[in-house]
Image 1: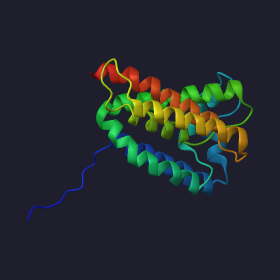
Image 2: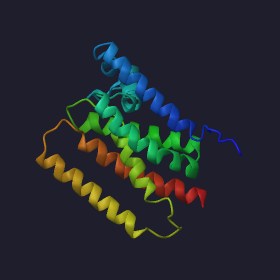
Image 3: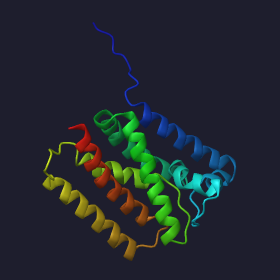
Length: 187
């Protein structure tokens, strides 16, 4: 009988979730100070702490429900993307999406930003592009994109629940663009 071995198959995914969990637990233990320091402020500035927040808000979460909602999707999708694009490319995609979301949030909105939902939606959109051939756009990608963006726009207009629909939309758009750019490079 052969032995089953546990493998460390997606180091970026596992490290990303470990940082998310550490920030979420740290936020509880410090009564919100972690999110206050590492969350994205609604300010456009070149101050190092503000710029840091453009990148680090993706690790902070409002509570455990918020954390687990994102963690489940990331555990499902990120390992597949990490295998397809490679660890370094995935890191670049994550922080590019975080930065774009943070900057646009600071410029266009008057609220802070925490959470990895933009990264989740980047992964959702990118996963629908994984089997894309050069010069083609899969019909399922169009359906996912239209349904997803439509849901976020409608929810943003009709539901007041402190969820950053803007972050979701930017994450999804970022996933579409980065998926095509980096997908083209790997073909």
